[in-house]
Length: 86
Image (cartoon, rainbow, N blue to C red; front, side, top):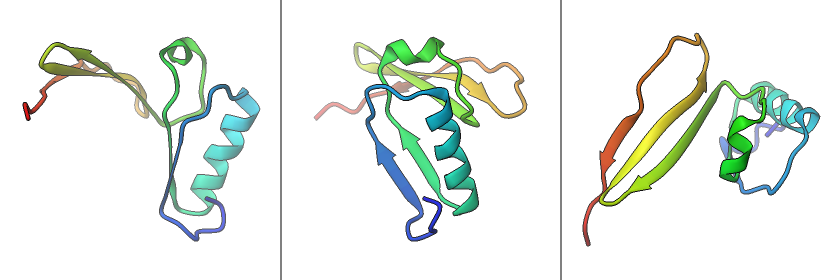
């Protein structure tokens, strides 16, 4: 991400330390790219330097998008999205 060779990186890590998360954030910022980490639900309660943290849960034919953290810190309700039926 730091090299600027790509605009986005997607990853599914099992476990990351706070120091590694911070290094990834700094690399993304310095390379003007975005990093998207898809982490297990158990990571929701852990601290993170991420500017935006989301959790998506399925509720039948809907998905609930919950904003766990965002810059500015003002509270926001979750959003429900209707899932398309095939």
